[in-house]
Length: 524
Image (tube, rainbow, N blue to C red; front, side, top):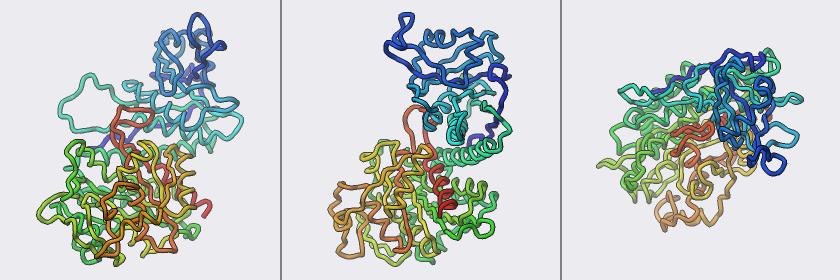
């Protein structure tokens, strides 16, 4: 079951007070202390730029009225006000932007979250305009992109599986207009086009992650990705269980053998026009469509969220669709290993020794460390095919959540490439923090009977996130720069909607991966 991805996005340069829309969104800043104290209030509001004509229509009493309604200007807060004919739109929604920045527009991520909060709060209003603060004396591309992405992602809703209509459920916004000085500006139009492409990829990722695990098992997931990729003009190769066994993909076969739904490996290929810049990028994403832990079974509490353990593969597959549309000047291949980790009489066991695609032999100590097994094969295949840069992303370890929380991904690998990942993540609002790969962690993963064990031989949880990175390093050749991006926390949001994140799959790190590919296309 998928959600509609038909939200229309366009630019307008009409006076916001005269726009024929169902609601108009303006930004407000918080201001406290003596400077802001007035009429007995603890503070007052400052209108952000872009809302001047709306304020004039209210005879200068707009901020006072919003404050009386409880507005504080706090980040993401949305206060609605009936306009009673003062402007064309029947409703004004003021979204908080926090304190006013000195001498600059709000940060792109602030705008992205604000636009997402506003559009989600305005469900039921089909046509909404955003009169948000955008720089008028410098290049506003980053801010405009942020507003557009936030609006498209904040309005996402998974269709779900309910059989009865919900009369109180308001439909998401279907058309978003962004007020700009010049709607015909080519650069601004390009940003809107890009935002639509990338946001659609994020929304598709969310759809896949949010799907019920019985609806999206490895064969059907592979079919969905392959079908979308073919429609986008990408090269597609799908290896079934027989081809995986014949090809020596021991890790993927081992993890998948416990399920009646057999494993798959999907390879997608984007070839740039005129050969591109000569560089090659490989993307790898973990596709465990459901993770029970296998024989090393997980606790029952919260296990249902393990439908999201394919978030890395979903992000990589959808990012490739965006790449096909954006056409960067660099060759990109993607590898999506897919399996369902189930306990059965045919499951792989603790104590098994598995021969991986690159010939290395792995001693299995915990079948719940299955992600690294399928990723090892996929990464080794990517290196065998040839690449200059390898970006792998996965919901790999609970240690990432313990160390960095639910917003910040952990990144390990070649230091220079990890730095590029961090820069790209900061640019798009998907932060990542570089982590080390210490020698003592590798020493703890020595095996008496094989080349390496999956986890610390003493089952020590210390450095759990780092153990995943150390293991994956074994499957990358020395000539390839690589980065492992652990998104165990950021890929799935189990709390209430916030900013442009809705409950469920977030689509992280689609935007980061697209940014990285464009960076390599531009800078090598």
